[in-house]
Amino acid sequence: MPTAVIVGVGPSAGLGATLCRHSAQVGLYVFAGGRTPTQLEQTQREIEATGGNCTPVVTDVTEEE
Image (cartoon, rainbow, N blue to C red; front, side):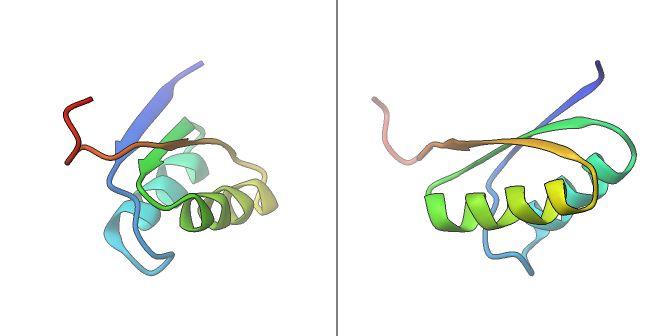
């Protein structure tokens, strides 16, 4: 299955979330990464509501560990 990995998802009006939604609409399985679980889960719900697939991944690239 073709997959998209998108890091830096912000609020649902942000570029990252928009890229996630678009990628899912064209049939890619999306792994959405970002720091805020609530925003990632909102993006996941929006994608799944339109028939797409998304796995949210809480990650913070500002922390080396």
